Length: 304
Image (cartoon, rainbow, N blue to C red; front, side, top):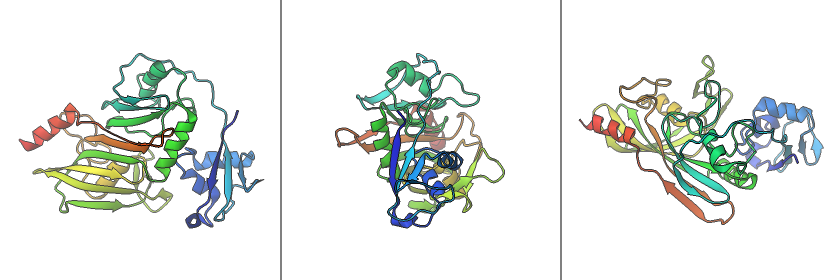
């Protein structure tokens, strides 16, 4: 059966184009172009009626989006060890190692976290994010280590995605950024969108962007770098990497937004804590991951 998701247009989104607003709903996970296609096929209704793709919504509108039925899964499970921090009938919390890709993508057709999850969970994974991302509610970059949450069913997926959209989901990172910060703490409030020239990169921009907020505090200052704690209020692609580069303090080792660093591959960034309301019990749950060896090695090198 196709799944239908419901949204209520808030007062602050009054007058905005519906396709644009819906594309910003993380729980839906659809691009603006795919939403326009679904609107043309009558899969999006407002107050019970179909609308054109240039419809401007009104506060209080009830929007229903019918999602396509999940395709049959063709990925092959792989017996890859998982560091499982927590697991029950609704979800898993996994500690992802640095270097592991979360889901299949061009150049990474095997050996991903999804392949490992398929082996461990079988068909007990949510289907909302489609064939190549079963169970994946949110993702972290290949060279980012740390905690990732996985949904085992669609009900849990919707609940967890809604928490992310409402900014009530705790995501705390530790990172090493280049240079010394003057302030001991601060907030980066800068919208993020696709880079106008390099489409593989994101950047701070006012054009075709989404609001992005990152809070940071200094743990330790070194001669040429700073150990930071960061909390995400929003969850845009590459958000921490883009925001710190925007400040002039790119992540140590980030060869996309900064420079490579001898001894580590990719950025020095660790998802150290996540917290959320359990979709079934309603209890708040929080998990922490200690700094991995590569991160500790970088800190030792900076101290010396």
